Amino acid sequence: MLIKTAEFIISNSDVSKCPKDPIPEYAFIGRSNVGKSSLINMLTNHKSLAKTSGRPGKTQLINHFLINKNWFLVDLPGYGYARVSKTAKKKFQKFITNYFEQRQQLVSAFVLVDIRHEPQKIDMEFMEYLGENGIPFSIIFTKADKLKPMAIERNVENYTKEMLKVWEEMPPYFITSSSKTIGREELLNFIQETNTEINNLKNQ
Image 1: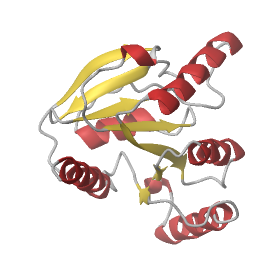
Image 2: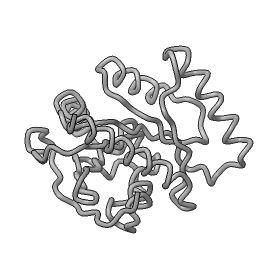
Image 3: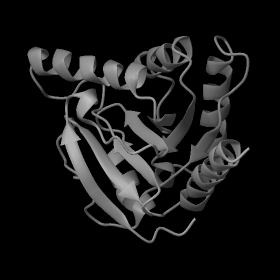
Image 4: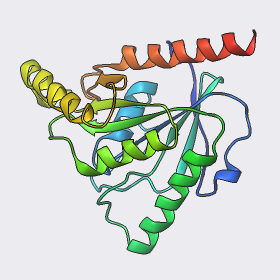
């Protein structure tokens, strides 16, 4: 997929105020320091489409970006140890669940995981939540440039073993690096193929 246009549309904390356009939507979410904004900027080939910060927890709203005029990339607040007050965290955790449970345009979630670490309880619990609510998702392993190929393979194998303790099969996954643009083509092709399938079903 060639990204021709990527434009910010709206930020809010109320799912009912999200865009009404009946077009596919892909939500990106992960722990607060997983490199989500950098990944979004890499995917869209925009240096500052999503705000990056050295301080985890920068994203605190539902952010909609219209890509190629025909699908939405949705940047959601990170879960985990963002440096925000307990009141603020409860508030945005609630609208995260509202988004996933109410947003009919949502096609798939992408759960970002730092490939350098062992499977984290909070990530596993969040994916279980998605599964329990019937929300399709893929895993995006980030920061692959920080490891050698053998270490990447070993860590993915470890993650797969842990996932298969709960899941019947491993969900789709992508190995990425924002600084090296690793995984960009594979991820965008996956979205394009999914959009094509949706259009074909509509036209039947």
